[in-house]
Image (tube, rainbow, N blue to C red):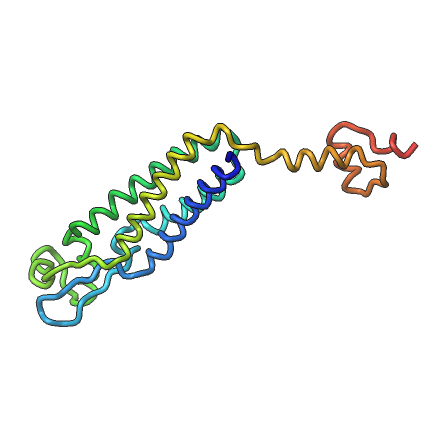
Length: 197
């Protein structure tokens, strides 16, 4: 169960980060124009500027969590909760009531006009696509996985045991030592020439 808890947490965090990265390149908002010209499309990274960087950070946190020690697991869990809170708030704002300011750059680029008066004149309606809802679901999963990390991290097995066991087994081997084995022996304070005598 402990191994499954770690794997489930890490995979969920990595999945949420990957969804964030993919969604940052997709259309999140469609801006309907009052001048009957074709609508403006706003990508996720433009609608929510923290989307791509925080999604990358979540991916990194998930990768580090896979090999982290006991104390670092709690730090990473708290950081992931903070990232999910920021992403949840920003995505919910865009999904349930996108502010007019989100369209400002797209309107300025398409028309050459800027300012509040231009926005109110040109923008008829801002409609979210399905991507903000997908991202919001990913952030909820991310939050749940982060809380799960905090509750289960204490019981996770240490990641370095496998390597320590392999290293200890090598020292008990009576076979010939190569140059790397000799350096490892020296690093641990053992004289590798003693075994050869």
